[in-house]
Structure formats: C-alpha cells, structure tokens
Length: 69
Image 1 (cartoon, rainbow, N blue to C red):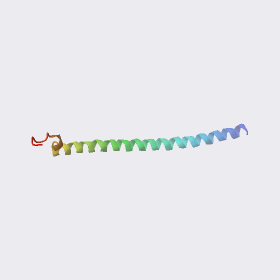
Image 2 (image 1 turned 180 degrees about the vertical axis):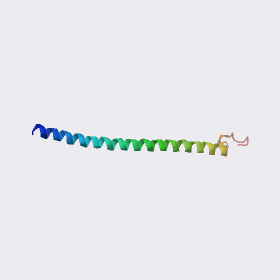
Image 3 (image 1 turned 90 degrees about the vertical axis):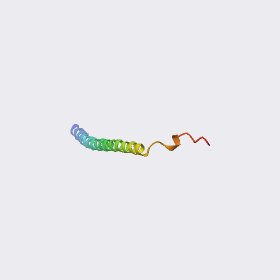
Image 4 (image 1 turned 135 degrees about the vertical axis):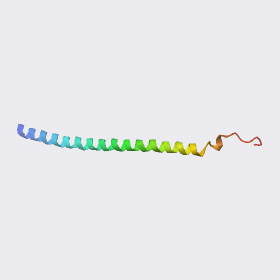
C-alpha cells in the first residue's frame, strides 16, 4: 500500500466520520428540543393538576371520623 493509498483511505474515513458526527449532532439537537417540549408540558400539567385539586377542596379522607365511629 502506497502512501497515496493510505492518505486516500484516511480521507475517506474522515469524511465518513464527519458525516456520522453531523448525524449524531442533529439527533442530539432533536432530542433536546423534545425534552424541552416535554418539560414545558409537564410543568403545565402539574399546574393544571394543582388547580384542579384546589378547586375540589380538601380530601374527605383527611377529616377525622365522626364521634359515633
């Protein structure tokens, strides 16, 4: 194998690695966007749940039983 062949092989490998790195970077960016969206949705749902719990009032199970029990 000549030096030119070795250099060509290395350039091909680097080109493939650059493509793979770019694909991985795009995947990571997409995942972070999805994580951010899901985090915002979770906060919104938590707020809605807290509002619904306040609207319902206290849990009847938290009250002491009547004296005849």
